[in-house]
Amino acid sequence: MNYLRVEHLSLTLERAEADEAKELNSVSFEVDQNEIVGILGPSGAGKSLVLRAILGLERPDEGEVFLEGEALSERPAAGRGMAYLSQRLVLYPHLPGEVNAGFFYWIRKQFSKKHEIRFHPVVREILTHLHLTEASLLERLPRSLAGGEKQRIALARALASEAKILLLDEPLANIEDNFRDVLRHFLRDWIKKRGQTALVVSHNQEEMASLCDRLLLMDQGRIIQQGGYEELCFSPVSRITALFMGNSRKNFLSAEFIEKRWKKKCEYDVVLLPQLGKATADDPWDLEVEGKVIMVEHFFREKKKLLCVEEKNELFFWEVAETMSLNRGDRVRFFLPVKEGWFFERVYPYKRIYQGVFE
Image (cartoon, rainbow, N blue to C red; front, side, top):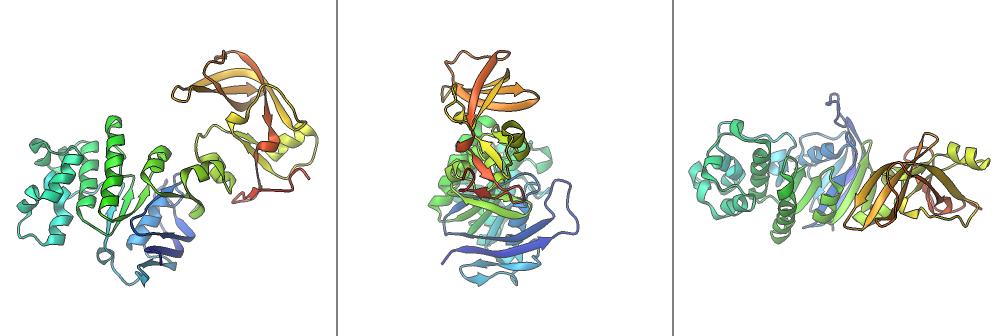
């Protein structure tokens, strides 16, 4: 039996911010105990709304959330055994940083005095890992803290709560770049060692790939696909997944474009990875691209570079070896093997077509 189960969760908000989702459409997924699941998707996809619905801050119109087989609809948010880190970083304005960080732990353990938080080993360990040990910083009120400092204190508060389930909305936002990798590894290690379960929302795919065991991709209030990072990048079931995951610079050929080039009826859109490009053609369905290199993006670790080529106001992408002598302003000719692309329906949610395209 799954630890956390979300079944057909549907919800419509009367009001929402401009970049927030207004609805969920029959969202269903399961999470195992001690699993870390990431939720990805464009702005307004419903990622944060899912967390709030699971916690009980938003009441669904339909569907249910189950924890260890028990329905949670009648349980208040405070009684669900979950800790929530909001994007809004709501800290208690009248409490200094260290007391803010240990507040939920203090409530859970029913300490008699707030100052007992300051020297508790659990709270101290978390603060140390988050580089929050300066007395001058921990004694300051939230209004005098920088964004990254507030972020780390809010994260410390969620971790110190010892909740069964962590709902973390952009937990590494506002963190200094040189500290994000260290903090990401600490966060995964902490959750795994303590047997907690976590749902994490983020826009950073690379961070989610290393932090999470599994990913959910959302769009327009529904789950489009779930699986590992490589599965979503290289085995997309929808055009939404294909264009969102991994490097966003992919070759997109609309049905109209294909009909115009080959003078044949086409009912599908095609997405081709830039690494499929080649210098010579060996199939009638290879698309010839001849144009000017207008941008070069280098990937020194992989010893490769990505060329953006403009041809008749259309942009195409070709990944080549770093040693290849092609630079911005050069003219180039290459081919894209259309048959090796991913084919998708033209109506939402743009499902992938696996066979029958060239029959």
